[in-house]
Image 1 (cartoon, rainbow, N blue to C red):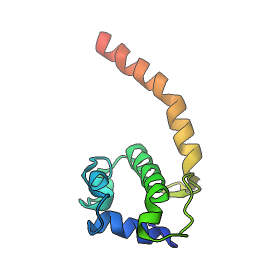
Image 2 (image 1 turned 90 degrees about the vertical axis):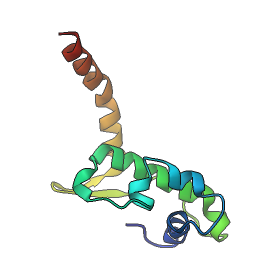
Image 3 (image 1 turned 60 degrees about the vertical axis):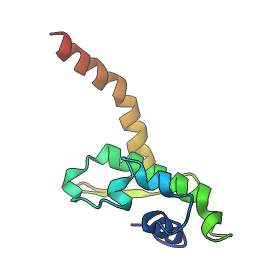
Image 4 (image 1 turned 135 degrees about the horizontal axis):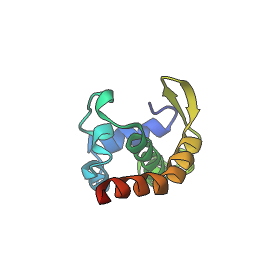
Amino acid sequence: MVTADGHLVYNELASGEKAGFEEFRRDPALKPFLTDFVDVDSIDPLPATRAIKKLIWIISEKQDFVRAGIGVGPECDCFLLAKGGIRDMNREMTEADEQLPRKRARQKQRVDH
């Protein structure tokens, strides 16, 4: 859910009316949130969170193409609504990134056996 004036940039990203946003609409990680709306159960939380952070960055970088003075920053101060309650998106990403080396090692170990 995009709120405040950031929704103006999101709407332009999704609508395809403004030139300069085509590359983002074609991005496979962003398509479920911009053009190919899919069932929420079909998207894993971690890729979805990474895509949302990318959308925030794009909105921040491209906001002046839509309207000057929107004021969306590149840093995420968003929260995730999850089955376990409300969680800080930045903390979730940090924890997931810290776990990646261990997950990769376990996957490699499974392949090697």
